[in-house]
Amino acid sequence: MKKKPFSISTMFTMFLIVFSLGALPGTLTAREDMIRTDDGLSQPKVAVDVEYEHGLAPVANRALTTLFAENNGFRGNSFDLEATNECLVVTGWDFNFTNSAGVTGDVSIYWREGTASGFENTAAGWNLLGTNSVTTAGNNLPTHLNVGGLKLPAGELIGIYYYVETYPNPRTGYTDGGPTLFSNADLELTTYAGIGTPKFGTSFFNYRQVNATVYYEPCFNKEIVSGNDFDFNGIPDRVVEVGTVFFGANYIFSINHNDPGGPNVMIKDIVPREWNATFVGGSAPCSVIRADERRNLFSDNFITCYPGDYAAMFFQAAARCGDTPGDPTCHPYECGAFYLNEGAQAWVGRALLDQTEPLCLAAVKDMNGGGLDYTGAGDEDGDGVDDYTEACINFTDPCDAGSNSPGRR
Image (tube, rainbow, N blue to C red):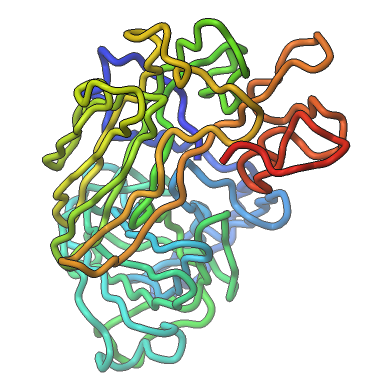
């Protein structure tokens, strides 16, 4: 995922990403007639007309939102979560409460291996993730619940049961209908029941759509946070030019490790000798043996970190030509993959527990004099495959259409 770049001077204050969720598109048209809700209360009947592209609600960065358009309610909901591509860790939730703003109460989250559907009436198999207090934001507005630490292994179904302990303060708002699948590139959420009284009793209602946002982070990943932006599009460049006299590249990347309840690990990574690496901050102790400290042109940078359950570690990779202009490794000298670092590895003793993919830039020549596309979407050799895909995914030469030969790795 891409983030907008920021200056090194603000690096230490920007480790928390703040999500601003706007109102969902659509219309709510109130009618004068009343309906009886699942908890026996009367409320105006609401005709909900909410349309989403492809039938899915819009999602925020590292978050999945269903909808906030309640027309019914009681104490909670059941639903399923599944991480589709990589291990994720849930860091928090937003839910919809029908009360006016400022009402306080306690909300619990339970989870189980496998689906929630059909298990709403039994406590067997459910695990308490946590209970915390909330203060309502108002009807059809997201109210945050700070209960996190739920690990979602890729491809495994996890059932969720959320329950207001202090009902009717607050009272959960949900939407009739379902089961409904909401998804983004990382996560799937399937809605099931509305939950009544008592907890894990026979009072549940099929089907009801949870009004929620799920916030999450990858269990273990690396990302480019900021860097060169020669096209001024607010996104770090994914392309560097081959043979430039002064490379001048400067990138910040992060290593993120989130494994609640997991073993204590040691994170290792290598930044190639084309760069000088520096640890610039984070929530775990790290050390870096820099390439220039080893006083030769052929030494890599070695990173070692000791994260706990949650850690975000930030590093600067600066091109070495800044301090050794004669160094032939200070710029890419042929087309192909040009790595910021190798894959980070998580070790427990001598056992390799997990690893990430390396961070790659595409080294490209300006073949036609028209300048480079720094997003990587250009096609300098005109073979129909974009420069970044050729260099960093196919590991072929983005400057040679005739042979499509392997480039620099």
